[in-house]
Image (cartoon, rainbow, N blue to C red; front, side, top):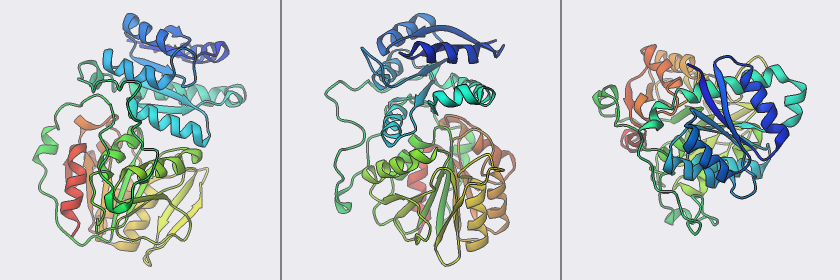
Length: 376
């Protein structure tokens, strides 16, 4: 059965191009279009699409407000289009908090210059998030914030001593954890030298949920690898830093690992760690699909810290992290995976679970608590 898509954008050119690209795939059907957020809500209710592509800047009602309303009234996977700017990153992160599943850079030049590449990327995204529809169809959702509601990200940063965990983003409530997650043992307590977390689709919200549970005196350094464009990672690190008790920053070459500090791999590059506790930031290798790549960081951690690493693989499409997890296991380190029930896309965690590389499988809302328990 074809994936039904609703295309929402105030630009007639962009609506036509996106519709043409999607319609060229025989397994995708564009069932309607909308020019603003209000039309998007009406069309979503009437057409019941499997996936919605959504622009942010539109008249009448912007994309984020539309996403919040759609998640409240007819939960549907939403793919946001975003500009590759710091402001575009901030807006996209707001959209993910509101309930959007994933995003793609909105670049008119790429559509004209690399139509085949754009077609492949867009269609793959639509198919992947369509598979998450079963998590939305019967999901209960948080009430949509009113116009007077504060943003999820506060405008001013609280002092470290008074930081408090942020409220969970307004996304559909997932089913209870799977039996596999429930059967996992209590975490093994150890003086880990590093916690490494890798993720992709659904990762921004997942990382926020995990990291906001950690205390300011969390005893281990953390490295975070999130598949994300170069223009986005600085804004994402700043957002997490405002919301978390621990400190979060975009990693720079030469940064030193220290307890209570999470370093986010910069988009478009690769991050490695060495035995001295220093971070190396390397140019993104065009031969690698992911920049940053979870396997690269996990592999360097295995080489540098042996059995003193606790790695976590969160929601994401594909299998990045599996081979790095294999190296970690060979070194004696611990590997956890997010359970299927709480994933947006059960790809990366499934890859390590199926390869028998996990020591535990936990639901998303349990991972932060277990990290605190595990790290002495």
